[in-house]
Amino acid sequence: MFKKNHPNYFYTSDGIRIFYNTNFHHETVDHNRPVLVLIYGLLCSNNHYKYQIPYFEERGYQILIHDYRFHYASSQEGDIETCNFPNITKDLHELLGELQIKNTIFVGHSMGVNICLEHARRYPQDLKGQILISGTVVPPQDIMFDSNMVDIVSPHLKTFTDNYPALFKNFWKHSYKNPIAQYMIFDGGFNKKQVEMEFIQLYMKKISELPEALFFHLLKLMHDHDVINHLEFITAPTLVIGGDKDKIIPNYLQRILTTHLPVSELYIVKDGSHVPQADFPELINQRLLRFINKIEKNNASTKQL
View 1 (cartoon, rainbow, N blue to C red):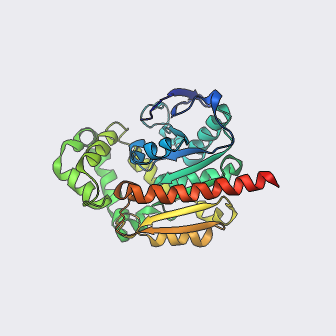
View 2: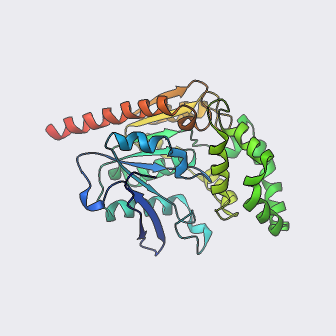
View 3: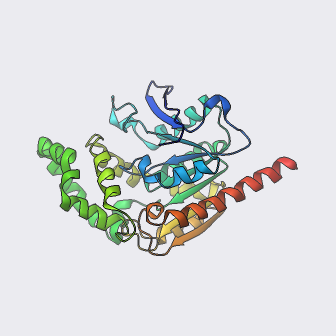
């Protein structure tokens, strides 16, 4: 994924193995420049940043990616209930401490926005700023596709999976091969004129690698997340991004974020879907870079005082 990969594992204080990768050796980290911490969304992967990673790497930025507990190369053993926002943020906080990284800018997409906000609330000292893409701080079941359809359908789907676990598991592991399922994901979450089907196929293939119980579990976590009550206390400079054609998370949710986050600015992407960083990577990369440069300049000015 990087030009120079430095993959490794880290064990948390409760014994969970966390996979991470950087484009720098941790002993040579430049503490004067921020480390970009890329945080993916619900059932997503680091592939959702495939257009951001080379862009920022070519400009000399240090980048950290990792897998949450119960995701991909990290440990998928134990009680899935331990995969929650407090533990996910604690894992990352401990990882940053292990690597002695204190100067970071978080970039979160979709559920990654929840993780960024929870981290900024619990460990504000860890980050100098954050970029929040296509997120929501209200229950997604209430607003996905601008309706409560998901809230109505989810219990019935959960009942089906409980009654026919083998059938659901087979569907979960092989749906990425189904062209109808591919098109439904493509149409629902992406700008079809801008994103190639290959991106969708890899996205769905990665989903099949996750435990099938994870979807319902994470959806419930997002439903119960109370970070909206803490937004006014999160003072990290924040860039909020949303697509004006986002069918999954309507962009008025981004306006709610910027209304309640004290130091924030909003960027709505014309014709952007739920994944604007894949729809219009050049546009998004330039906007991210401008925000990151501003944070770097502000931090440099503060050090001179």
